[in-house]
Length: 236
Image 1 (tube, rainbow, N blue to C red):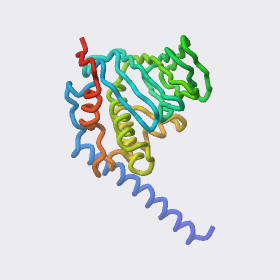
Image 2: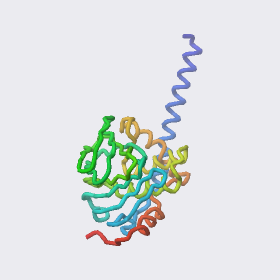
Image 3: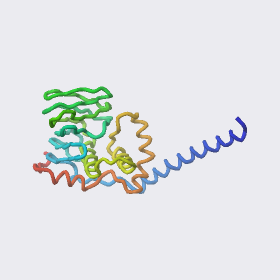
Image 4: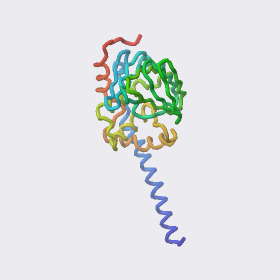
């Protein structure tokens, strides 16, 4: 390698490191200047709130939730139309989930292993295991899911379902940036890439997504879920 090539590589390395440092410092500045919004207690999910994702053929009903800003279990009923699915396989680093099939037949993929579950079957997904759920049958399916501890997943469910139902799961840069904001606040990660790698990428991308207007909480999604609620039962 000639001296000129070596100098060029050295300059490029310095530019890359310097650019990365500027991105990180800029992100820290954004965090300091644009703090996460406070979520009022009445915008936390309550028993009976209903989430819909029409594009995924999914409907979710909250059956038990912790009090706002307190830890505890959450129970939801997931209703999947034929061909319906939880839209993105994902990972919860600190939350265990138990899927109990009430009606129909579904497939779960846990850490890459596909499992068939029918009415009466239960499948436990440990914290940190990737998982996805879909209904491959020609009949509706009903799955009861218990999550503990919740770790803000009730809020994450409301926001992600609200966003995907509103946008129709179109993909693209906007969806990528919005999902980065949700992941930043609620610590829900995609299946596949290592969590540490996703956290690093989110730390770089999410502050800039925040700067251009992507938020981690939208009041309208919480209101939509409450308007569908036929119970209006406050958490005891």
